[in-house]
Length: 183
View 1 (spheres, rainbow, N blue to C red):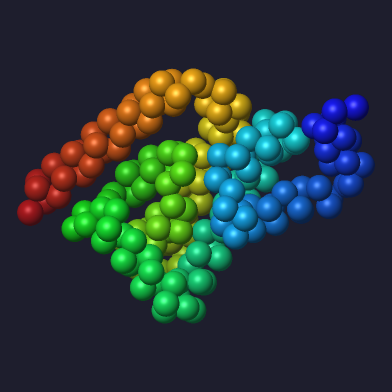
View 2: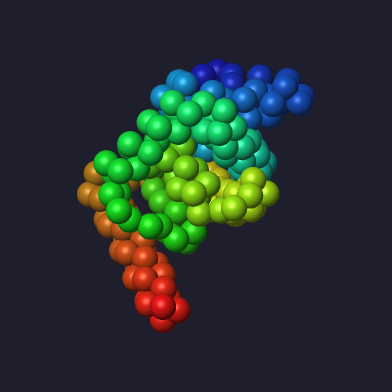
């Protein structure tokens, strides 16, 4: 029996513990320096597409809530994210749509995007609403296509990244046009 089969057998035999540990893995992911895509792909391999996507959605939603709590409870964490924001995208306002596209991109800092979303929203309820919407796409895409994306050659990954970058820019342009129209 290979390792994947052994893990799948453990998951099947563990009842509720397997899914609970997987959601916990999403919460521990930043401490373990694991990319979101890796955890979601593992969810698809271990639980199948539907259950893996649902569990990844739950895990990433809980991580969004944890981000909210961390940022408001620990000013030093908020300061670090603010400095990172100034380095990564200085003087740039992102739209909710752009944040959702960035959530799909592998290796984009999860907490930084949460920070952007917090600055755009007025309440925790509004933040969590947009956060939940924002993690649907990565949960589904990474779980369903994560294996394919992961198996792409470097140039395939580069093309996919460029396509997402173009979508990001188009959404930003549409947002800028909307702001110009309102002004």
